[in-house]
Image (cartoon, rainbow, N blue to C red; front, side, top):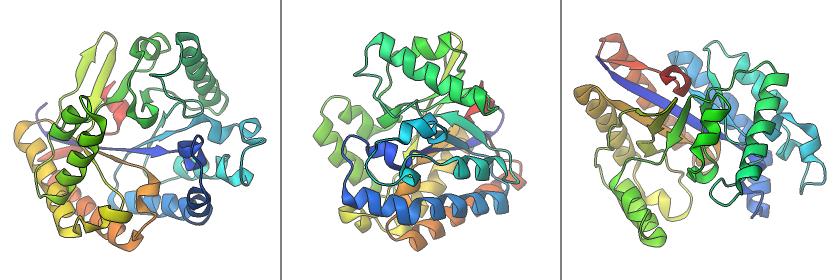
Length: 285
């Protein structure tokens, strides 16, 4: 890896991300904000010529899956957003975030395979390749099924000190994650790991939302962490893998977009100097 690499992956879910705990809060923000945010993200990525991975829940392209669900159809069915991504000036990677956002660590082998087959059919019917995969809730499990069905790259768990704590104790790990976001510490760069025919590309940093106590993470601190993440990837010839959901922009979107645009400008500057390149997840396969 001659240069550092920046990779951005986005979990596109709409209401599927909270199908098992859907609240009025989720419904309201999904209806009012989600599409606006996605289109604004696309405009930003076009402006800076940044290809990213949009890992979407396959059911967003299956109208039947929306039937009988709480709220209006637009919460669950979004061909307009997938069309917008496909129509962007920049060519993005349209990966999978599972069939209906079910959790692979809790499903049986057959249930997990059925979920992948559903996603695979949706991609095929819509003329989309399927090379990258992001596990719902980052619950990595049954990776051999991805390999069996021709998926080449998945996002592994974050390579971070707080994630290692979380793997041992969930609640303490959540607190550690929040503490990490409050401090201008450099996120860890990651190296793609080959696992048979699969590539495990761990995350480096979640671009956290600004709801509740999270709003106390100052924009300056977040921007510093992003810059340090790029610098660490450049100096170690590794990958800075940033990821988020459109819902991470629901609260204080102007601050969030200002931070992201500052990051995009930094990435473009470093790319122009030949210090880094920008790659979507599928490019690692």
